[in-house]
Length: 95
Image (cartoon, rainbow, N blue to C red; front, top):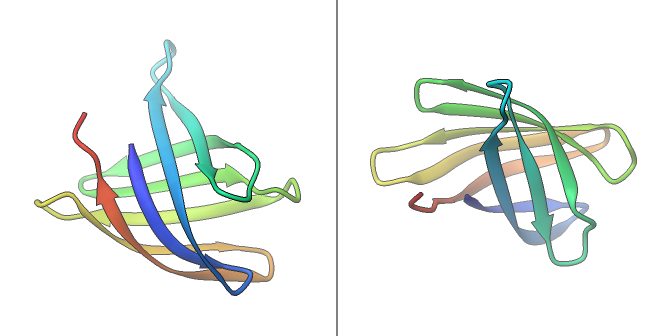
């Protein structure tokens, strides 16, 4: 579970991203937050301490969340989708 702070459409938001390993070995999950519908995670790529998620945005397009997780589980990175995006910060919760 990741607690993510970002700015979307000019508003500061706190999102929760849950990533789960599927039976076929791929990853999926969902992103939730106040004022947004539950958004499905379409794909996840993990390379070392970097996580890249493709999330279905409310408009049906793709939102890309790119995060780096440090040894203290702090998150930094950015997100983007058509016409919007920002830097992000947050924390990875213990499993």
